[in-house]
Amino acid sequence: MLSTTLPQQPISSTDSLQLSLGPVLFYWTRERYESFYREAADWPVEIITLGETVCSRRRDMKLDDWLGIGRELAQAGKQVVLASQTLIESEADLRDLRKLCDNGDFIVEANDQSALQRLTSAGLPFIAGAALNLYNTATLEVMARVGMQRWQAPVEMAQKELAQLINDCHQAGGQHPCEVFAYGHLPLAWSSRCFTARRHQTPKDRCKFVCQKYPEGLVLRSQESRNVFTLNGIQTLSSACQDLRHELTTMAKMGVSVARLSPRAEGMTEVIKAFDQARHGRLPPPDPLTLVEAEICDGYWHGRPGMDNTRTVPA
Image 1 (cartoon, rainbow, N blue to C red):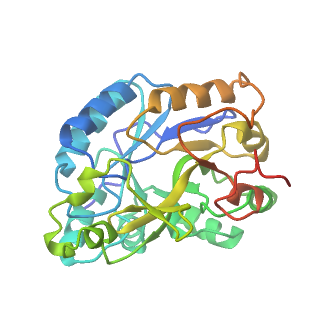
Image 2: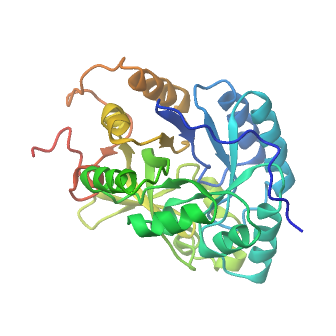
């Protein structure tokens, strides 16, 4: 029998915009995960989401390992969330999912309908992941009635559409904390095929874990040599990183509760520092001439093609 209570403190609801650190989407070594989260314990983020959301063949980290890291982060004052796998493909995946949902320590982020069914049937609270594709007030009301504590906006939802949806929820009397993907390669699609293994001419079930060679994914270019996507095993991400640090004030005014930052292999300390400064109003105006190490995109947020960078592309 599943417990309907969680020992961890409940997710707080405040007027200030919180920062969350999303799950690592790429396949790292155990040592890299441990080092990363030791640093994260001191970062100015309120929420940290742990777990493998992409591929069940990535077995370096077991549930007990994530729970151990989660307990250390909780002791450091972080709100810890365990994320479920986004694409369930086998009975073994379902067994792992049941163990995750039954963990008894931390609230779970449901990223597919299997996790949602398991959590709601047990009466457990949950976070609704972006892959659940929540687009309207009626759906959010249903989800809230069965235990949703927070929901993530689909990554392609424009700011105007999201603002209208949040306002409609408030008008209907619903208070549903919303989380927006504010930084990182945008998760776009999942497939039963492993594109990274295919690139290496290796079958998926004998992939030799080649995706671990790419701690920030494998860039896919068009015939015109333009970076289009980032391949990450069975997951397809944007080539560029979405960066909404200059939109945090707008988010707060809209009623967004949390801005999610997706981990990258290098430079996350600087990224989080910049977002923390931005939410406290300490951010210089955007400079289109400033050189950045990574290509930036924010088109979806502004109702444009996703790969656009509206800081440099004229309206």
